[in-house]
Length: 56
Image 1 (cartoon, rainbow, N blue to C red):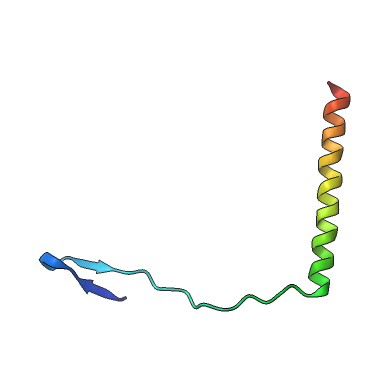
Image 2: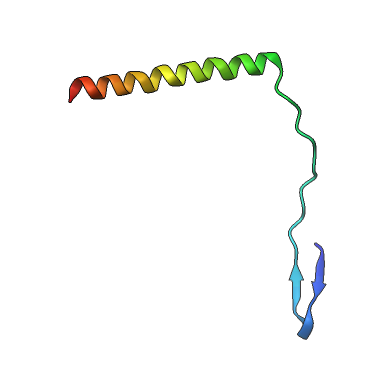
């Protein structure tokens, strides 16, 4: 653990920093999966709104 000593003898303990990496763009298969989930989500929300309006 990285410690530093401050004024008055107090110890300050810093958290371990995670490794930094560059994100990779999604593959074609992942992009297709995002589109499918988006459409399914829109259908689900649209269906819930339809049911709520038709019941009220």
